[in-house]
Picture 1 (tube, rainbow, N blue to C red):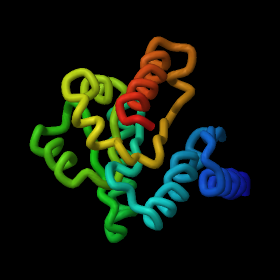
Picture 2: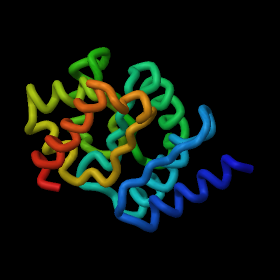
Picture 3: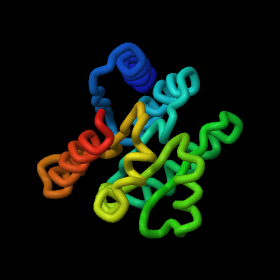
Picture 4: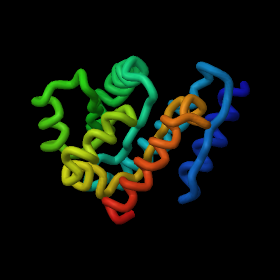
Length: 162
């Protein structure tokens, strides 16, 4: 019952405010889905002109797991799901740049590499991003990596003018 309440409150907050939303609940309680489902619903009503959802995770393994789950969920929803990290081939990254829609899953380090090496790709990919979902945010808090992530969000905001 608690899970349903968490997801209902999260959905209401995401769908009815422009403010940032922080979802907290116990491990494996559906927080990520509580963020993704209303975001996807809003994205399907008003498609983005670029990547609609940027998903940031501290771990590539978590990205791989979420990628499988989302790809299966969105198989017929016409919303592509991509990963971008050191294990992803250049041809797959080129495909992301060509399609420039849907969900892009990254680690902070991959986002930093993009901002340093090819900032024009970041502008192109994130110029109309509607949602940024940071999974496992507690793992970033009070750490150098958390400071890096904060700085990346500021740089991305300035670069894209939003």
